[in-house]
Image 1 (cartoon, each protein chain N blue to C red):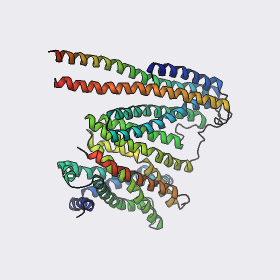
Image 2 (cartoon, each protein chain N blue to C red):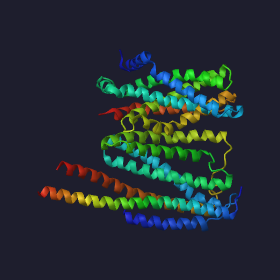
Image 3 (tube, each protein chain N blue to C red):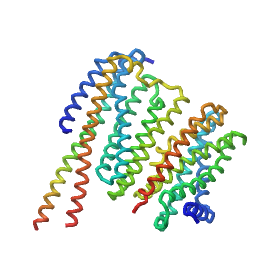
Length: 54
Length: 220
Length: 223
């Protein structure tokens, strides 16, 4: 069955949008996690330095 | 007594005393069949889904049995005792598989006549072939299940984790067994060697892999 | 490879792949415009299989070497695997609906992707419920290895359904023959390859940091 152009175009847009949305959300969560972790790592390192100085 | 048969003997002895595992499995399995009987009351639908209903019942009853079999070991730290014994970890695995296999098959052999009755079949050669497929499928199911039940017993969710791991991993068993059973019941056995060999391959691969990997699961 | 290079390369190649898939490639004869979904659908499927392969390999390496680096590697491939398997299923469904009037075409590849996604989810759930680091690594790698073994067996098993159900031909339908379509497919594969490498590198970096944060927290608590 050959679907008409309008249906086909909507489907293509939906499919590609879904893929890019998934990739984008994944990459975005990675970036925010990285920033949070970098901050935490820095805090811990400072903590350790202060503790060893005492 | 050699260690491997000793484990099977121990499990059988425990089961003979309280008969809890087999009875729980067969009651649950029969109940699943009853649900299917009421859910798909029309004759036509029942015929086509019958093999599927059978293996749904076997799968859930099987998981029940696997969980019980393992909780015998993990309650009261009996597993520690087994590990202290001079027993090869792989043999411990095979012993548990053998025990699980025996109990599951016993339950299945009681569920099968219920299946025959609900689907108005006859006790002829087809049923014998169905039993053969069941045995082969159960072997694969139990070989993976024993490994996964040991893994899931260490998690915070304990027994609830087993179906989450077991159901996707035993999909090939269910697919092959249902397809083979369907072929047998319809009498169209052309091409049945494919699902049957797949069941054989599955059992071989997972028995071997689990035999060697079991020590990694139980190490302290 | 430098993360920045991978990121820009992925972006550039993705844009190129979009052009090749939507404009450059000729319209397919039987299915029409909607066939263009295929240029993205297929690489995602391949990405999920590659993830399964990496999961199995990394799991085995951990069990041999007991280096947590391999456990983190396995973990990343599982996360990417579940994402690409899910998008593969979704694009497959969006493709199937207008063409065969079903959401679930029930063909072998779709079922295989479903089982694969469930195996990845099972692996991730297993890790989530194992609090202790060494135990988490050891038990999940055993499961990861067994799950990877399951993939070829599942491939054969889902073929059984193919012989039973009337199979809607979810194939290239000429994509393998026409040279322009081939080019579009290659560009798409290249784009997804770089994207996969970028996301994997990024994810692995974060996994390393998580473990380091954990380790430092223990050190700080001990001090």
